[in-house]
Length: 298
Image (cartoon, rainbow, N blue to C red; front, side):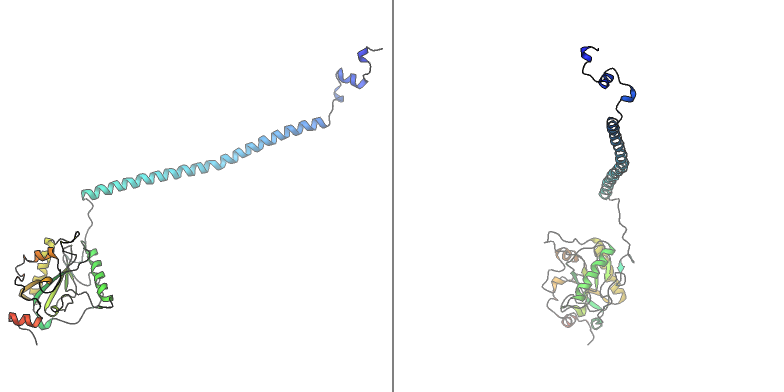
């Protein structure tokens, strides 16, 4: 007989309590559950590792790209700042000089400033050689280099040629730029369209700019401009287009106008050939030549 504690226990139960043999240990579902748990952890760890590799693989080029972009932007900003500082100092010190090249030192032809081929054939031969030189100003923008002056002249010519009310060539015979050069308008022996009533017996010369000192912004006539103006008139005498005793007339002395501006008007009074009597106002060419006793062709 066994002990009371042994009563009611089956042989299998006793075998389990006392330590079952190996072959009696369960090998079914518990083993499968254990394997799945381990497998799940293994797969999860492997996937995390793969994801980390992918993130690292994509993150490195992106990081390098952003770093290089920032470096390039920083370098560009440094270079721009350096260039701004350099050119500011250069311009301030006056070391940056723009070369102003022109086809001629001072005498610029229509071909030089690329004038349109439109020249009035009317001549002033009836009153040649001319006695009068009428001076105007263009009342437009200044120009201090050959290329700028050529642009101004082309714009001026286009304004007169393309206007439905005008339709004629640039009205002056010659123009004096702020660069001190003389620019051919209609040229010698051509009737201008600058001063009504005096065009048939005068040479029309315009200074580029607005020389009215009453304006806040106005042009100032330079000594170089006056020298070149005088050289032009001397050439006219040598070539036979002007009388040696020619007379300089500011437009305001013969017409109701403010041209050539107070600044230039005052400068013209220093010329020996300036007409000081203002006695030609309101007269036509025939009356002027008759008054002076000058011959002209009938």
